[in-house]
Length: 312
Image (cartoon, rainbow, N blue to C red; front, side):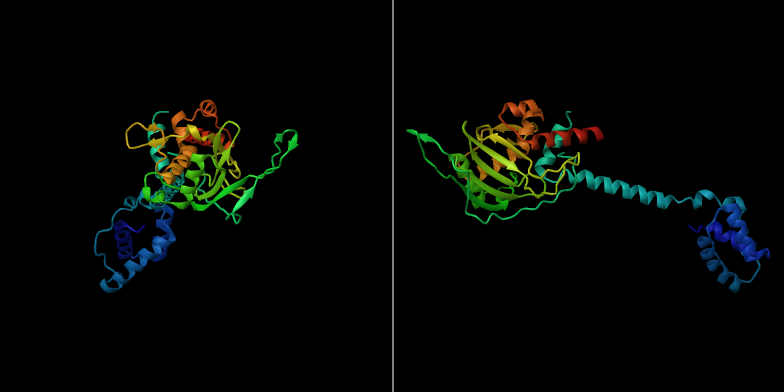
Protein backbone atom coordinates (compact mmCIF):
# COMPACT_ATOMS: atom_id res chain seq x y z
CA UNK A 1 0.00 0.00 0.00
CA UNK A 2 1.44 3.37 -1.06
CA UNK A 3 1.91 5.86 1.79
CA UNK A 4 2.50 9.65 1.82
CA UNK A 5 5.88 8.96 3.42
CA UNK A 6 6.92 6.81 0.45
CA UNK A 7 5.91 9.51 -2.09
CA UNK A 8 7.75 12.17 -0.10
CA UNK A 9 10.85 10.02 0.19
CA UNK A 10 11.04 9.30 -3.55
CA UNK A 11 10.54 12.97 -4.42
CA UNK A 12 13.30 13.98 -2.02
CA UNK A 13 15.76 11.42 -3.36
CA UNK A 14 15.07 12.41 -6.96
CA UNK A 15 15.66 16.02 -5.93
CA UNK A 16 19.08 15.00 -4.65
CA UNK A 17 19.95 13.67 -8.08
CA UNK A 18 19.67 9.97 -7.32
CA UNK A 19 18.62 7.72 -10.18
CA UNK A 20 15.28 5.92 -10.18
CA UNK A 21 16.82 2.43 -10.10
CA UNK A 22 19.07 3.35 -7.16
CA UNK A 23 16.08 4.57 -5.18
CA UNK A 24 14.02 1.47 -6.11
CA UNK A 25 16.84 -0.90 -5.10
CA UNK A 26 17.27 0.89 -1.78
CA UNK A 27 13.54 0.75 -0.99
CA UNK A 28 13.29 -2.91 -1.89
CA UNK A 29 16.37 -3.90 0.09
CA UNK A 30 16.00 -1.69 3.16
CA UNK A 31 12.30 -0.85 3.22
CA UNK A 32 10.79 -4.15 2.03
CA UNK A 33 8.59 -2.46 -0.61
CA UNK A 34 7.12 -4.48 -3.47
CA UNK A 35 7.78 -3.75 -7.15
CA UNK A 36 4.09 -3.12 -7.73
CA UNK A 37 3.89 -0.47 -4.99
CA UNK A 38 7.10 1.21 -6.14
CA UNK A 39 6.02 1.28 -9.79
CA UNK A 40 2.79 2.98 -8.79
CA UNK A 41 4.68 5.42 -6.55
CA UNK A 42 7.10 6.39 -9.32
CA UNK A 43 4.19 6.90 -11.74
CA UNK A 44 2.77 9.39 -9.25
CA UNK A 45 6.05 11.15 -8.49
CA UNK A 46 7.64 11.38 -11.94
CA UNK A 47 4.97 13.60 -13.59
CA UNK A 48 5.18 15.89 -10.60
CA UNK A 49 8.94 16.10 -11.00
CA UNK A 50 8.58 16.84 -14.70
CA UNK A 51 6.35 19.82 -14.03
CA UNK A 52 8.08 21.22 -11.04
CA UNK A 53 11.69 20.60 -11.86
CA UNK A 54 14.37 18.60 -10.17
CA UNK A 55 14.72 20.75 -7.10
CA UNK A 56 13.19 19.19 -4.01
CA UNK A 57 9.77 20.52 -3.14
CA UNK A 58 9.61 19.21 0.36
CA UNK A 59 12.21 17.98 2.73
CA UNK A 60 12.79 14.28 2.34
CA UNK A 61 11.64 12.16 5.20
CA UNK A 62 14.29 9.90 6.74
CA UNK A 63 14.35 6.39 5.35
CA UNK A 64 13.46 5.01 8.76
CA UNK A 65 9.92 6.39 8.39
CA UNK A 66 9.32 3.83 5.65
CA UNK A 67 8.20 1.21 8.13
CA UNK A 68 7.83 -2.43 7.23
CA UNK A 69 4.69 -2.41 9.36
CA UNK A 70 2.99 -0.32 6.70
CA UNK A 71 3.75 -3.01 4.13
CA UNK A 72 2.53 -5.90 6.27
CA UNK A 73 -0.50 -7.47 4.53
CA UNK A 74 -3.01 -6.57 7.24
CA UNK A 75 -5.77 -6.20 4.65
CA UNK A 76 -5.23 -9.69 3.25
CA UNK A 77 -5.15 -11.24 6.71
CA UNK A 78 -8.33 -9.38 7.68
CA UNK A 79 -10.03 -10.59 4.51
CA UNK A 80 -9.02 -14.23 5.15
CA UNK A 81 -10.23 -13.99 8.74
CA UNK A 82 -13.55 -12.54 7.59
CA UNK A 83 -14.02 -15.34 5.04
CA UNK A 84 -13.32 -18.01 7.67
CA UNK A 85 -15.82 -16.43 10.06
CA UNK A 86 -18.51 -16.12 7.37
CA UNK A 87 -18.09 -19.72 6.19
CA UNK A 88 -18.09 -20.99 9.77
CA UNK A 89 -21.21 -18.98 10.51
CA UNK A 90 -23.01 -20.36 7.47
CA UNK A 91 -22.19 -23.96 8.40
CA UNK A 92 -23.32 -23.40 11.97
CA UNK A 93 -26.51 -21.68 10.85
CA UNK A 94 -27.21 -24.55 8.50
CA UNK A 95 -28.14 -26.71 11.47
CA UNK A 96 -30.62 -24.14 12.74
CA UNK A 97 -32.59 -23.85 9.57
CA UNK A 98 -36.02 -24.34 11.04
CA UNK A 99 -37.44 -21.79 13.46
CA UNK A 100 -38.73 -24.50 15.75
CA UNK A 101 -35.34 -26.21 15.90
CA UNK A 102 -33.68 -22.89 16.67
CA UNK A 103 -35.99 -22.26 19.63
CA UNK A 104 -35.29 -25.70 21.03
CA UNK A 105 -31.53 -25.52 20.91
CA UNK A 106 -31.49 -21.94 22.20
CA UNK A 107 -33.36 -23.02 25.33
CA UNK A 108 -32.12 -26.57 25.85
CA UNK A 109 -28.49 -26.29 24.79
CA UNK A 110 -28.00 -23.37 27.17
CA UNK A 111 -28.68 -25.84 29.97
CA UNK A 112 -26.40 -28.67 29.05
CA UNK A 113 -29.86 -25.10 17.98
CA UNK A 114 -30.77 -28.26 16.08
CA UNK A 115 -28.40 -30.62 14.50
CA UNK A 116 -24.79 -29.77 13.71
CA UNK A 117 -25.01 -31.59 10.44
CA UNK A 118 -24.21 -30.93 6.81
CA UNK A 119 -26.51 -28.67 4.79
CA UNK A 120 -29.28 -30.89 3.59
CA UNK A 121 -31.22 -31.39 0.40
CA UNK A 122 -33.81 -34.06 -0.10
CA UNK A 123 -35.36 -35.98 -2.93
CA UNK A 124 -38.82 -37.50 -2.92
CA UNK A 125 -40.77 -39.42 -5.50
CA UNK A 126 -44.48 -39.38 -6.04
CA UNK A 127 -46.52 -42.41 -5.10
CA UNK A 128 -48.42 -43.22 -8.27
CA UNK A 129 -50.48 -46.00 -6.76
CA UNK A 130 -53.69 -45.20 -4.94
CA UNK A 131 -53.13 -48.12 -2.58
CA UNK A 132 -50.13 -50.19 -1.68
CA UNK A 133 -50.79 -53.88 -0.95
CA UNK A 134 -49.53 -55.40 2.29
CA UNK A 135 -48.47 -59.04 2.13
CA UNK A 136 -51.54 -61.21 2.73
CA UNK A 137 -52.25 -62.40 6.25
CA UNK A 138 -53.71 -65.81 6.86
CA UNK A 139 -55.69 -65.85 10.08
CA UNK A 140 -57.14 -69.21 11.02
CA UNK A 141 -60.91 -69.49 11.40
CA UNK A 142 -62.28 -73.00 12.14
CA UNK A 143 -59.04 -74.41 10.73
CA UNK A 144 -59.72 -72.67 7.43
CA UNK A 145 -57.13 -70.20 6.12
CA UNK A 146 -58.78 -66.99 4.99
CA UNK A 147 -56.63 -64.67 2.91
CA UNK A 148 -57.19 -60.96 3.23
CA UNK A 149 -55.47 -58.01 1.64
CA UNK A 150 -55.23 -54.76 3.61
CA UNK A 151 -54.69 -51.60 1.56
CA UNK A 152 -52.76 -48.52 2.66
CA UNK A 153 -54.45 -45.18 2.23
CA UNK A 154 -52.43 -42.88 -0.02
CA UNK A 155 -52.71 -39.36 1.42
CA UNK A 156 -50.55 -37.84 -1.31
CA UNK A 157 -47.61 -35.43 -1.34
CA UNK A 158 -47.44 -32.20 0.62
CA UNK A 159 -45.08 -29.95 2.55
CA UNK A 160 -43.88 -30.41 6.14
CA UNK A 161 -45.85 -28.04 8.40
CA UNK A 162 -44.40 -25.28 10.54
CA UNK A 163 -46.46 -25.35 13.74
CA UNK A 164 -45.80 -21.65 14.27
CA UNK A 165 -47.52 -20.82 11.01
CA UNK A 166 -51.12 -22.09 10.91
CA UNK A 167 -51.28 -21.41 7.17
CA UNK A 168 -48.87 -24.30 6.62
CA UNK A 169 -51.18 -26.89 8.15
CA UNK A 170 -54.76 -25.63 8.40
CA UNK A 171 -57.18 -27.08 5.85
CA UNK A 172 -54.37 -29.02 4.19
CA UNK A 173 -55.73 -32.08 2.37
CA UNK A 174 -52.65 -34.27 2.86
CA UNK A 175 -52.43 -33.49 6.58
CA UNK A 176 -56.18 -33.89 7.05
CA UNK A 177 -55.95 -37.36 5.51
CA UNK A 178 -53.08 -38.28 7.84
CA UNK A 179 -54.88 -36.84 10.88
CA UNK A 180 -58.04 -38.80 10.12
CA UNK A 181 -56.01 -41.98 9.59
CA UNK A 182 -54.16 -41.51 12.89
CA UNK A 183 -57.37 -40.78 14.80
CA UNK A 184 -59.08 -43.92 13.44
CA UNK A 185 -55.91 -46.06 13.14
CA UNK A 186 -56.26 -46.53 9.40
CA UNK A 187 -53.01 -47.51 7.70
CA UNK A 188 -51.90 -44.61 5.55
CA UNK A 189 -48.88 -43.06 3.90
CA UNK A 190 -47.89 -39.59 2.69
CA UNK A 191 -44.81 -37.61 1.68
CA UNK A 192 -44.14 -34.27 3.39
CA UNK A 193 -41.27 -32.56 1.62
CA UNK A 194 -38.66 -31.10 3.96
CA UNK A 195 -34.99 -30.27 3.44
CA UNK A 196 -33.88 -31.49 6.88
CA UNK A 197 -36.26 -33.94 8.54
CA UNK A 198 -37.80 -37.28 7.48
CA UNK A 199 -40.21 -36.94 4.58
CA UNK A 200 -42.16 -40.23 4.52
CA UNK A 201 -45.02 -40.32 7.04
CA UNK A 202 -46.91 -43.52 7.80
CA UNK A 203 -49.73 -44.56 10.10
CA UNK A 204 -49.18 -48.21 11.00
CA UNK A 205 -51.58 -50.55 12.78
CA UNK A 206 -49.81 -52.84 15.25
CA UNK A 207 -50.83 -55.62 17.60
CA UNK A 208 -50.56 -53.20 20.51
CA UNK A 209 -52.42 -50.35 18.85
CA UNK A 210 -51.36 -47.70 16.36
CA UNK A 211 -47.97 -46.18 15.54
CA UNK A 212 -46.69 -43.30 13.46
CA UNK A 213 -43.51 -43.83 11.47
CA UNK A 214 -41.35 -41.06 10.02
CA UNK A 215 -38.54 -42.04 7.66
CA UNK A 216 -36.13 -40.70 5.06
CA UNK A 217 -36.56 -41.87 1.49
CA UNK A 218 -34.25 -44.63 0.32
CA UNK A 219 -32.48 -42.29 -2.11
CA UNK A 220 -31.91 -39.47 0.38
CA UNK A 221 -28.41 -37.97 0.17
CA UNK A 222 -28.51 -36.46 3.65
CA UNK A 223 -25.92 -37.34 6.30
CA UNK A 224 -25.73 -36.75 10.05
CA UNK A 225 -22.90 -35.11 12.02
CA UNK A 226 -20.90 -38.35 11.88
CA UNK A 227 -21.22 -38.54 8.08
CA UNK A 228 -23.64 -41.43 8.38
CA UNK A 229 -26.25 -41.62 5.62
CA UNK A 230 -29.81 -40.94 6.72
CA UNK A 231 -31.41 -42.78 3.80
CA UNK A 232 -34.18 -45.12 5.05
CA UNK A 233 -33.57 -44.18 8.70
CA UNK A 234 -36.80 -43.89 10.68
CA UNK A 235 -38.42 -43.33 14.03
CA UNK A 236 -41.59 -45.20 15.05
CA UNK A 237 -43.64 -44.41 18.18
CA UNK A 238 -47.12 -45.13 19.51
CA UNK A 239 -49.55 -42.42 18.46
CA UNK A 240 -50.95 -42.17 21.97
CA UNK A 241 -47.68 -40.67 23.30
CA UNK A 242 -47.85 -37.68 20.93
CA UNK A 243 -48.00 -34.27 22.61
CA UNK A 244 -48.34 -30.77 21.30
CA UNK A 245 -45.35 -28.55 21.98
CA UNK A 246 -45.95 -25.02 23.28
CA UNK A 247 -42.82 -22.90 22.83
CA UNK A 248 -44.50 -19.57 23.54
CA UNK A 249 -43.33 -19.60 27.16
CA UNK A 250 -39.82 -19.48 28.60
CA UNK A 251 -40.10 -23.15 29.53
CA UNK A 252 -41.41 -25.44 26.79
CA UNK A 253 -44.75 -27.02 27.74
CA UNK A 254 -46.03 -30.39 26.47
CA UNK A 255 -49.80 -30.86 26.28
CA UNK A 256 -52.19 -33.45 24.93
CA UNK A 257 -52.77 -32.78 21.22
CA UNK A 258 -56.06 -31.40 19.96
CA UNK A 259 -57.94 -33.68 17.56
CA UNK A 260 -60.62 -31.14 16.61
CA UNK A 261 -58.58 -29.98 13.62
CA UNK A 262 -57.30 -33.07 11.79
CA UNK A 263 -54.65 -31.27 9.74
CA UNK A 264 -53.25 -29.60 12.89
CA UNK A 265 -53.31 -32.97 14.66
CA UNK A 266 -51.20 -34.49 11.87
CA UNK A 267 -48.80 -31.55 12.09
CA UNK A 268 -48.40 -32.14 15.83
CA UNK A 269 -47.63 -35.81 15.19
CA UNK A 270 -44.95 -34.87 12.64
CA UNK A 271 -43.34 -32.23 14.85
CA UNK A 272 -43.35 -34.49 17.92
CA UNK A 273 -41.69 -37.31 16.00
CA UNK A 274 -38.97 -35.14 14.46
CA UNK A 275 -38.18 -32.95 17.48
CA UNK A 276 -40.72 -32.98 20.30
CA UNK A 277 -39.91 -36.39 21.75
CA UNK A 278 -36.22 -35.40 21.95
CA UNK A 279 -37.08 -32.12 23.64
CA UNK A 280 -39.38 -33.78 26.16
CA UNK A 281 -36.80 -36.43 27.14
CA UNK A 282 -33.76 -34.14 26.92
CA UNK A 283 -32.30 -36.54 24.34
CA UNK A 284 -32.29 -39.49 26.74
CA UNK A 285 -32.27 -42.64 24.57
CA UNK A 286 -33.52 -44.90 27.35
CA UNK A 287 -36.43 -42.63 28.13
CA UNK A 288 -37.33 -42.34 24.43
CA UNK A 289 -37.29 -46.11 24.08
CA UNK A 290 -39.40 -46.46 27.23
CA UNK A 291 -42.09 -44.50 25.38
CA UNK A 292 -42.19 -47.37 22.88
CA UNK A 293 -40.16 -45.58 20.21
CA UNK A 294 -37.57 -47.26 18.00
CA UNK A 295 -35.47 -46.60 14.90
CA UNK A 296 -31.98 -45.46 13.92
CA UNK A 297 -33.15 -41.85 13.53
CA UNK A 298 -33.08 -41.65 17.33
CA UNK A 299 -29.37 -42.52 17.40
CA UNK A 300 -28.57 -40.05 14.61
CA UNK A 301 -30.24 -37.15 16.40
CA UNK A 302 -28.50 -37.91 19.70
CA UNK A 303 -25.12 -38.47 18.01
CA UNK A 304 -25.43 -35.20 16.08
CA UNK A 305 -26.29 -33.29 19.24
CA UNK A 306 -23.30 -34.73 21.09
CA UNK A 307 -21.02 -33.93 18.17
CA UNK A 308 -22.17 -30.35 18.27
CA UNK A 309 -21.55 -30.19 22.03
CA UNK A 310 -17.98 -31.43 21.54
CA UNK A 311 -17.27 -28.55 19.15
CA UNK A 312 -18.61 -25.89 21.49
